[in-house]
Length: 203
Image (tube, rainbow, N blue to C red; front, side, top):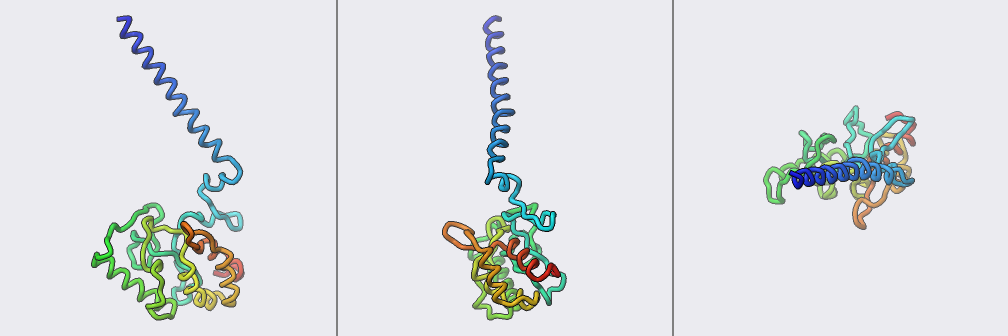
């Protein structure tokens, strides 16, 4: 009986110690680290604000929808595998890939449709549409696009916002950073906010 009592008390002590360590000390430690200057923004979701309001996250790409598709003033993200339409915005609350291989007939058809739609939207030949414009990422919510895809969209954005192409090109350059290991990319949310500011917030 004494042995059973000793084992029970030992088990309770271990439970209490690990409850304090993993249920209190560890979470507080993680929270304290997240308050270190330079890390706080990431801990809070890397929210980008404008005019005192949250405009979105620099880490989550949500494709903008133009009020008038014929006068679309926005740079667009990569397509989302979870979108109902070929170029429609994905659902940021549900992230995931299509799990389709390179020989999947549905994927090949989707890429072909996306290429036609983007070429028509940008007024270029299909051969000029870059790969990241027609293929979805694993998450479907990449915040950045390739410099090539951004450059393809510059003439349309300039035309529909009334900004000079050189000004739009400058804004793209100012919002170009690392999208991956050694790969430059343009943050779509940041460049769209910059374009809206430069155009007087009319769009």
